[in-house]
Image (cartoon, rainbow, N blue to C red; front, side, top):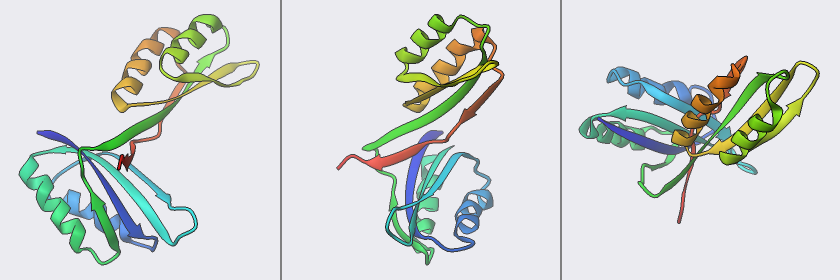
Length: 155
């Protein structure tokens, strides 16, 4: 089993996402993370898919992606810059200085605070986001939201 990040540029139209996710479902593969956003000043969208699977089957899926009509480009290059964001809500009664120091160690910061909660935001490599969540567990987070992986070719 191999982890694979696939970036797909598509024409932004209805049912494209359903067709792409159907390729994975049809082969019994789970999508670990799926992020979709429009590309500014165009009628295109970028779909970033994180998945695990056998290399041979993932190569078949990539070949099938190339054949879909609204797909313009598929990148599965190992030279992708990957990032993920997380929001972590913690009760205000926790040790604020320790939370801030821990968040800073993972490229994070306090994004919002009110009389009940503080919300931490961090953007980092996916495995570092997992580590941050584990480290923040001692502060008993009330809620955690992960964005899913985004990726871009480095060249």
